[in-house]
Image (tube, rainbow, N blue to C red):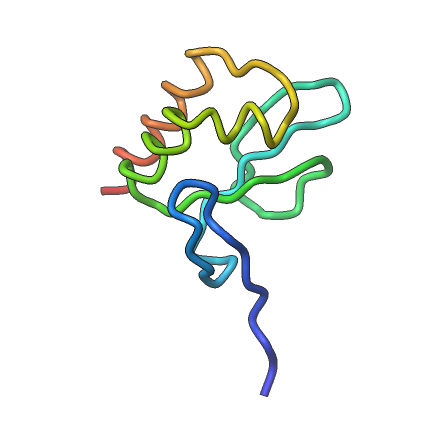
Length: 87
Protein backbone atom coordinates (compact mmCIF):
# COMPACT_ATOMS: atom_id res chain seq x y z
CA UNK A 1 0.00 0.00 0.00
CA UNK A 2 1.40 3.36 -1.05
CA UNK A 3 1.59 6.14 1.53
CA UNK A 4 -0.08 9.41 0.60
CA UNK A 5 2.02 12.52 1.28
CA UNK A 6 0.79 14.40 4.35
CA UNK A 7 1.08 18.16 4.95
CA UNK A 8 0.04 20.50 7.75
CA UNK A 9 -2.37 23.38 7.19
CA UNK A 10 -0.82 26.64 8.43
CA UNK A 11 -4.26 27.93 9.43
CA UNK A 12 -5.61 25.19 11.68
CA UNK A 13 -2.48 23.00 12.15
CA UNK A 14 -4.26 19.80 11.11
CA UNK A 15 -2.42 17.17 9.10
CA UNK A 16 -4.20 16.18 5.89
CA UNK A 17 -3.42 14.52 2.59
CA UNK A 18 -1.43 16.82 0.31
CA UNK A 19 -4.07 16.59 -2.45
CA UNK A 20 -6.74 17.99 -0.09
CA UNK A 21 -4.79 21.20 0.58
CA UNK A 22 -4.06 24.33 -1.46
CA UNK A 23 -0.36 25.10 -1.96
CA UNK A 24 0.92 28.66 -1.91
CA UNK A 25 4.45 29.02 -3.24
CA UNK A 26 7.15 31.72 -3.13
CA UNK A 27 9.63 31.47 -6.00
CA UNK A 28 13.25 32.66 -6.10
CA UNK A 29 12.20 36.12 -7.32
CA UNK A 30 9.99 36.55 -4.25
CA UNK A 31 6.69 36.27 -6.13
CA UNK A 32 3.89 34.50 -4.31
CA UNK A 33 1.33 32.49 -6.26
CA UNK A 34 -1.13 29.63 -5.93
CA UNK A 35 0.35 26.34 -7.11
CA UNK A 36 -2.42 24.29 -8.68
CA UNK A 37 -0.09 21.44 -9.74
CA UNK A 38 1.71 21.07 -6.41
CA UNK A 39 5.06 20.90 -8.21
CA UNK A 40 6.15 24.50 -8.72
CA UNK A 41 9.67 25.38 -7.62
CA UNK A 42 10.03 27.38 -4.43
CA UNK A 43 9.06 27.47 -0.79
CA UNK A 44 5.56 26.13 -0.23
CA UNK A 45 2.90 26.51 2.43
CA UNK A 46 -0.38 24.63 2.62
CA UNK A 47 -3.89 25.72 3.55
CA UNK A 48 -7.15 23.81 3.93
CA UNK A 49 -9.70 24.53 1.25
CA UNK A 50 -11.87 26.70 3.49
CA UNK A 51 -12.02 30.40 4.18
CA UNK A 52 -11.76 30.00 7.97
CA UNK A 53 -8.23 28.60 7.74
CA UNK A 54 -7.21 31.41 5.38
CA UNK A 55 -8.61 34.07 7.73
CA UNK A 56 -6.81 32.50 10.69
CA UNK A 57 -3.52 32.44 8.73
CA UNK A 58 -3.99 36.12 7.79
CA UNK A 59 -4.84 37.16 11.35
CA UNK A 60 -1.80 35.38 12.85
CA UNK A 61 0.48 36.49 9.94
CA UNK A 62 1.43 32.85 9.40
CA UNK A 63 2.12 33.28 5.66
CA UNK A 64 4.36 36.28 6.31
CA UNK A 65 6.41 34.31 8.82
CA UNK A 66 6.60 31.24 6.58
CA UNK A 67 7.84 33.20 3.57
CA UNK A 68 9.83 35.72 5.68
CA UNK A 69 8.39 38.72 3.81
CA UNK A 70 5.34 41.00 3.93
CA UNK A 71 2.34 39.75 1.98
CA UNK A 72 0.24 42.26 0.01
CA UNK A 73 -3.53 42.50 0.27
CA UNK A 74 -3.83 41.58 -3.43
CA UNK A 75 -2.39 38.12 -2.72
CA UNK A 76 -4.81 37.60 0.16
CA UNK A 77 -7.70 38.70 -2.05
CA UNK A 78 -6.68 36.27 -4.81
CA UNK A 79 -6.54 33.46 -2.25
CA UNK A 80 -10.02 34.38 -1.03
CA UNK A 81 -11.22 34.35 -4.64
CA UNK A 82 -9.83 30.87 -5.26
CA UNK A 83 -11.48 29.49 -2.14
CA UNK A 84 -14.83 31.11 -2.90
CA UNK A 85 -14.74 29.93 -6.55
CA UNK A 86 -14.33 26.29 -5.47
CA UNK A 87 -17.51 26.35 -3.39
